[in-house]
Every structure is written in C-alpha cells, then in structure tokens.
Length: 252
Image 1 (cartoon, rainbow, N blue to C red):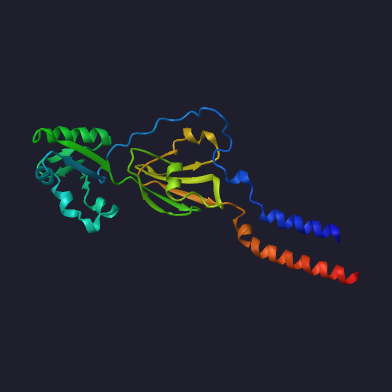
Image 2: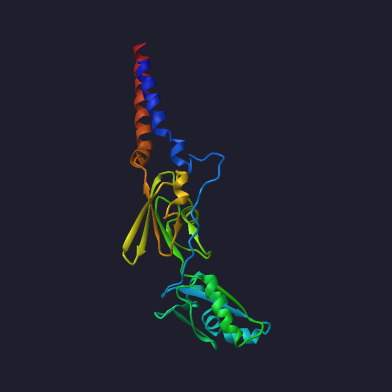
C-alpha cells in the first residue's frame, strides 16, 4: 500500500511540473558575444503608407504643406487608425503625391533616403522646412500560443522576432519555444522559416528580422492537452488516494 501511495504522489508531482528548460529563451547562452546578421534596410514599395510631416516656423505654411493630414485627422479620432488613413500611399509608379510639392518618387528607397528626397523637394519651396517620414504599413501578425494574438504596427526601421512576440504579450506557458513558424510573402511565393527561440544561433537566421506583413505562428507544446487535463487528473488521483487511505484505515 505504501509503495502504491508513493507512486500516486509521484504521478501528481509529475503532471504538475512544468520543466523550466521549456520556458526559457536562449537557454544555451553564457557570458559571450553573439554573432549576428546586419539588420536589413527596408525599401519602400508601391502600396506602402507613410506619415510625411513638413514643419516650418510658420504654422499656417506648415498647415498648407500638410493639408491632407489635417483634413483627415481630428482630436476625437487621433488613433493609430486615423494616422494610417491620413498617411500618404505610394502609388503603382512608386510616387507619393504631396500638397503643393506634387509627386515625389520614393519607391526602392529606405525611409531615411525617402525623407531626404522629400526634403530636397520641399527646399524648392521653403527655406526652413523640416521633413519627418515614418513608415505606417510595417505590420506583423502574431498568432497561436501568445497572450495577445493580433496584428501589430512597428514604427521603427526594423523589427526582430523577439520584439514582435513582446508586442503580443509574450508566449503562454504552452507555447513551443523551439519551433516557431514565420511566414513571409515574396514574389516567388510564401517563404517559411522555423525558428528556435532557445537557440543562440537564431540571431544569425534570415527569419530573425521580420519584414512587413510577416506572420508569426507559435505552436502549442505537445504536453498542452495533458496540462489542460491536469486538474481532472489530480482530482481523480487525489480522490483515489483518499479512498485507499480510508480503506487502509478500516483494515486496521
């Protein structure tokens, strides 16, 4: 009887245990410098949406050069959606059509180079212009075993997979950290990457830095079904243990 109770107790402990190694990122890293690939520079493409602001010392002149933005944005609708709606779309010819300035070709340029091109165009009309350009259409979707699945907008020049997962609230305890799928649309079709978030070599992977419209899918661990059933298993084992203890007491 005693041996049986020990076995029962061991089973209860085993189904309750969640191995630490399965929950840790980069668990093979020590005090070292990791090699990494250079963060890719995104080149603007037709269909992208950008925030383009032109500032001057005269607010009235600034408003004239930002007419499209001021017409589409107001205090009661100042959200991420309104920023996207009020942005400037890159047409099929790779151009943006700006108030007063007109069309400026910026496709196949980095955001920084596009800002410089628009700055040069603005300088033809203004002496004190300051141009600020931000990409609004750098969106990634994170699905599966994360706490806040959804589509997120990145306003920086680049985004890595850890940052995207952070936007989604981190993985759940059931997320499979060693096998995360990244889907990327390319002219040749959908390219896939299998990413091991526990391996330090992930920083050298082509899929480490995400591209606009990438999808990150976090699969569940194999033990998720068992973990979900753990409360029921524990209840059954606890009930069985209680019954056996009671029967053992009666025998005495």
